[in-house]
Image (spheres, rainbow, N blue to C red):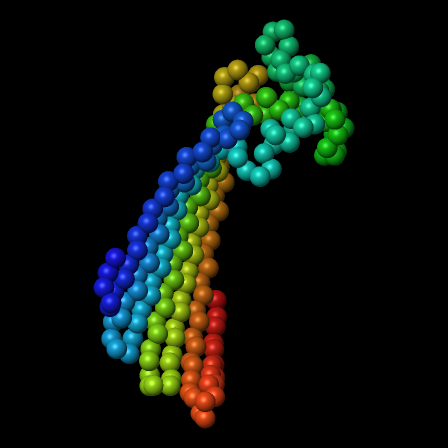
Length: 219
């Protein structure tokens, strides 16, 4: 909307996707606004901003459950006759449970049998949620100093915050004792700033157009 001196746009979005495996989803709420104004005959301003909040679980590019499912032999059972999750080896705790489900001597190489039980892993991560917040803004100030000379000042900034948490394992995932209950929380945040200043001279001489600019930028 707006008029010849002021135009604006405001838009929002909401995403709610369920993943292809259990306990996985992605939700995102976003808003965007753009404003342009001719404040003075010699000054116009543009301001843009974008903000979003995301909440997701078990849907990263390297989803461990999906990767393990590729390597887990199809003739192995997920649970034994007692309903306990079955793993590919033994670390001395018992025959049905240990931390990563890998064969003894596992060296991190992806080989058949050297992997976690994918169903167990997906259940164990079922209460690990992540959030991501971001806001990005930019402003442009364009000064018309004369018929041939313009000065433009641009600034932009971005802030983000990422949180991830893993709560105690849910019931029914072979929790043996309090030592098996794991709680983790990770947080990361950061920001970037950028400023650009440009002085431009434009003119026309004998049907020839030319333009000369000088720019200074820092972040």
